[in-house]
Length: 409
Image (cartoon, rainbow, N blue to C red; front, side, top):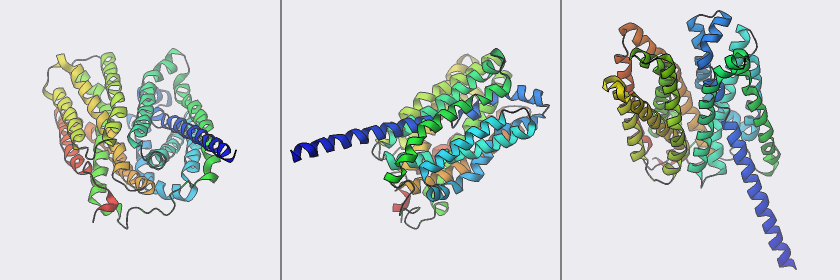
């Protein structure tokens, strides 16, 4: 009877464990869906917001730039705050602030627009940094699969937000306020799905107990950490430059505004499956140099195609850019876990990489536009992307080597 009772207890514990794992997975998916949609929903509406609030082009551009600056400035502090408050609780707090930021941004006023945008930027920065480390802690043997799930959830909803913003604002008559505010519903639902993680806090350690940033090694003085950081930064810069300027580049090549908008959507759709597949493949490889080579080559080929290729193959160049960007993004997310020894170190590296990365992402589109204004051509700006693709390859080869920060002597 005792043996039967023990077997029943074991089976009961297995069921509870599997249930808690699935609850965690669903929670991660819902949190991830909030990390790009509130940002990508703005781009198609910038003109409407500008005209409605009588903003200058510079101030209108700040609606997109402000969250990126928030990421850059706040990300380095997130790991320590996560350690202090507990990862699950800090993520919950961030999503609550994200919901309030979305609501505040959607009110009809210039001040609330920018305050709400800054607030949601700070909230997203917390999740950007902590989710990769949480995945490393909870799913150490399934790092690639869970990183892929997290990445595709984030990018899928980001692409959807770009596509439905104008139809909601104009087609359904909700205005830009409704089109931006509707994402508060997703944040609220995500809060409900994340609450079970708070109940589990008493059952396990929720921060990073007895974990250091890597054997006494300062990440900011680690060559490997900087290689991961610059890889993250360069791929981020390329993505946001293309998001901001690809339609204008295509217009100068004789493509209509309607067609250029669809081509931008094609680029984002092309990257989606690779943000899922690449982390899984990368997690099964000791070195990811071949994947770095593929990603860099695709980005380089797509950019050179825009520069010198035939306009008859424009869809091909756009797809190459999308696939290359998806591969690079998936790799950058994986490097946080693969190149670190523990969850706290992963959070530290994620904070460092995303700080520098989003600073590049914020300045990249501005520099790209400035070069266009100075030269009255897209040739020099596109050559900047060629250089970025080459540098991505160089730093990626270092980041992809089979080693970890704490083990480097």
